[in-house]
Image 1 (cartoon, rainbow, N blue to C red):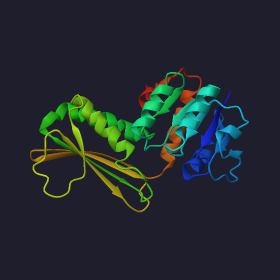
Image 2 (cartoon, one colour; image 1 turned 90 degrees about the vertical axis):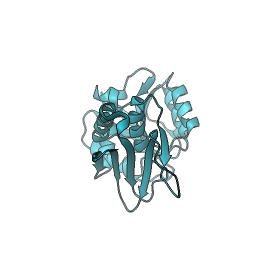
Image 3 (cartoon, one colour; image 1 turned 60 degrees about the vertical axis):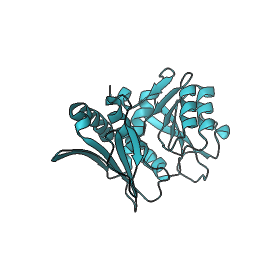
Image 4 (cartoon, rainbow, N blue to C red; image 1 turned 30 degrees about the vertical axis):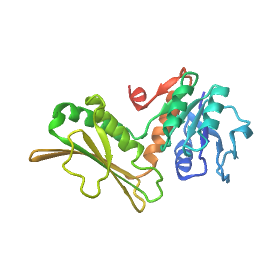
Length: 250
C-alpha cells in the first residue's frame, strides 16, 4: 500500500517540488495539503488540520515553526508519523518536539540532503583527526528571504564538530570591532543572505600554514523534496521516537 502523505505548506515551492516528484510514484502519494493560502494543486488543500477528511500515514511539514503545536497534536491524535522539514525552531519548540516524540514518530533533521549529511560525517571525522590545532569557521549562504540565521544546517555541522570536543566549543556569530585574538574554544558562524542562493555551506579548518575546507552546494530545492519523500516512506509504521537522516541511511 502507498504511503499516504499530508503535505503542510502544500502551495509553496517545496510543496510543488514534492508533488512533482510524486507524480507517477507507485509507493507514495499526497492525499491532501494544508496551507494558509490554498490554491488548486491537484489534491484537496485545507487552511487547518481540523478540516482534513482524508486518511493518511505521515505528515510532511514544509511550512515554518509557527503552528508547530497543531501539527504535532494532529499527528499524535491520529497516530501519524511527521517529517519536520523546516528550521528556525525555538528552544521551547525543540522541547515540545522531544515531548511529543515519546508518543509520536518524529523525523527531524536540519537538512534533508544526502550530500549535507555525508558532509556532517566528514566534518566530525576531520575534527577528530585535527583536534585543537585547527580553528573551525563555518560560512553559510542562503537566499534573501530566509528568516533564521545561522541556518539550521550550519548549527548541525557545528554540533557535529563540537561533539568531538565534548561540547566545549562556543559559537560566535560573526565578528565586529576590536574583538581581540581568536579564542581556541570558538567556532565562528557567518551568515550570508542574498539573491536566490538555495543553500551553500562551508566548514573551514584553519591550521598553521594549511587550510582544509569541506563544502556543499545545493543547486536546486528538489534535493530537499527528495529527502522528505524518502523520510516519509521510512517513517510509515515506525514506533514513537526521534528519527533523523542517520537512521534512514543506516
